Length: 68
Image (cartoon, rainbow, N blue to C red; front, side):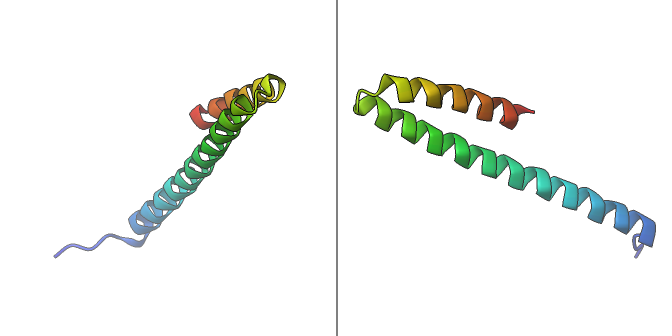
């Protein structure tokens, strides 16, 4: 039975940590998009188009951050 050497194990650990950080960032950005979507819907229901337009600009920025 072959075991990973210490260097290979450390590289795997480093890759997994980097993946986990990216995953958490994507989840956080997704939650922000959901929250902004909800706020846009509420603004439209209140007929507050000025606030809705401002939130649409915010969601576009948040969406571009998610894709980056």
